[in-house]
Picture (cartoon, rainbow, N blue to C red):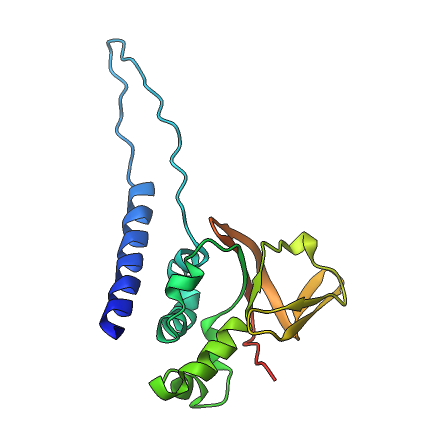
Amino acid sequence: MKKLKFLSLAVVVIASAFLASCENSPKEDTTEETAVEVVEEAPVEASNTVVDIAVGSPDHTTLVAAVGAAGLVETLSGTGPFTVFAPTNAAFEALPTGTVDNLLKPESKDQLTSVLTYHVVAGNVMAADLSDGQIVKTLNGQDLTVSINDGKVMINGATVTAADLSGSNGVIHVVDGVLLPK
């Protein structure tokens, strides 16, 4: 089962890399001296889930590893919508030494799942939808508190450093701290 989850994560990473390389490939020069009929193709909208967005970010490799270890890849790749407050690698590094390693151990899966689902809210909550003092319920059943001061949005004291990264099944707000449930 673990191999299947790792394989699924690997497929997502490879597919994301492939899509990214296709989007960045140079266009052919179709200008010629003779008339050429130009057929425009309808833009293809990528169905990047919140997991795909995280996988594509070099600043979220620890989060992606944790989501895989908790077995949440399939869930967070589902229909949603989900709002994810995504801690950066630096946020995980700021935790006490050994915390991440301990959470990634198989025997800590329940605790890891609790921490990760504390970063996820049901629904598609955009930054403009948040208000100072607002309480939002997470998927683990506990509450997060929003504070807004001078245009700076914080979630339980962690600053939102990038907002409204929209995916096909929700939105990601990057935060500079790991949110720890009670």
